[in-house]
Length: 312
Image 1 (cartoon, rainbow, N blue to C red):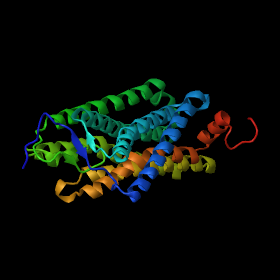
Image 2: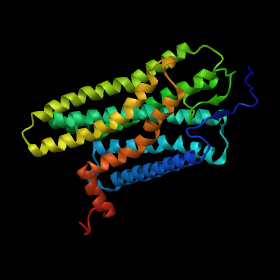
Image 3: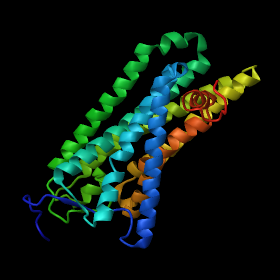
Image 4: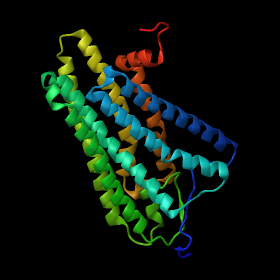
């Protein structure tokens, strides 16, 4: 087996689609999804910034979710599209590290942010009188900063480790981006300790927040069930169902992918699941939050003049 050459340290990304007409059509579909994600998330951030009625903790957190989704999808799709269209599948050693860092940062930070959004809804519905105190501007800012910092620290640790692994096998990564677990089979050393670290990290940044979100929404649904106001019930169910839809689309494929042992994983299945949380979810989030949220629809009417033929 050929020894890995330190003087030629580029990796090869095998990609998501075959180099044929079918692959090109699928890539064009991905580019369309990418464009919709850029437009939708940018519009959501703009709405929240310019409309004073959306200057609340819930929407500040939502603006950060949109920002993370923008960076999330931008860390993978442009490189994948460039490699397919140019016929070059290589990515530099440093470029692979940068891509891995941004991908992991967004993945971990978004998981923590979704938990913060669930806490916001829990306090708003279960403890409405305490909401102005528990979810004031400073608390919201602390949640946002903590999500970014913790996600970045965890990502940096994984990226640094991945870049220091001795690679002596084929440099072909069977994925469409530099996903650290997909890089481990190329290592010369036994990586079982690191795989355990990945399991622990996934549990801390994805599984525990997901369990916390599930518990908080269980409590929220119990409180909503006992509401007397039908309008209040309807609004609460609408808000909670929107967030639970986003959470399910994001967490389910992510947790399923990263908590399974390597022996039960296949590259083809990992790539398909990765499409959900790296490409589809960033596109769906702004659509879900806009179409199922009257306040966002109202902001779109006021700012863009959508859904209204007269100026309100």
